[in-house]
Image (cartoon, rainbow, N blue to C red):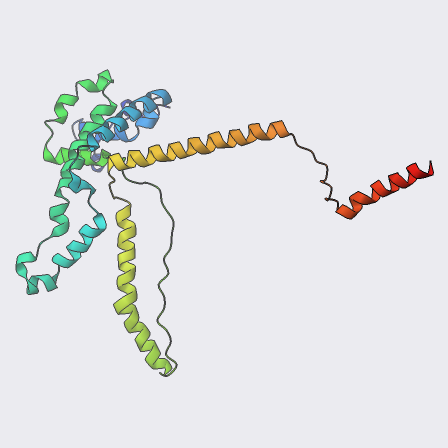
Length: 275
């Protein structure tokens, strides 16, 4: 622990390692490095306490964030492919626009403000960093963009859900020649298979950055925890009821038929008569 403490390192321009220059430090790079490796610079309890405080405040702010940030990225990219195309430019130039750049501008502004706020939330109780907070609001645009590297959205699903999708192959036409079927396969790949593969890849890639609604996400978590509690309680109830009944390793005898039950009774009556 502590091996990544920024106080142990000097931050210099690696391109100037062999040239004479004045001693200087990049304070922004210093803070970025410190935040990225905070888990190793702080002890475990301190890291967990500060990190949980940062996440809780982020989720609280995310409840009131712009709904545009939670729009479907797949729909946004689909609109961009339609409106930012040469066909749209020649067909109707009034609707031609760079949808991806315009619609994602709120994303970039949100990332800038949140990255600075997350840094403040984590180091709020650190006296060493308190004097640095006043400089955060006066950063240049270039330094703010560099701080975007620290941004982490805790409403994004980070689970890598492995899955696959099979695209059915074109049916072979026995009435055509092998060469004709090969040509039709190439045409089918160009007009059907490749666009489908592109759409599937777009959906998969967009899901890695899709922001969720905080209220819905917390509600789903609460339902999941409730389900786990119910399963946990039900399991212990089953164990307690099973302990009262006991358990035996003896084999359960087969049920006897009516004839087998009456036979011993007849034998007992005959023995009594002999006596």
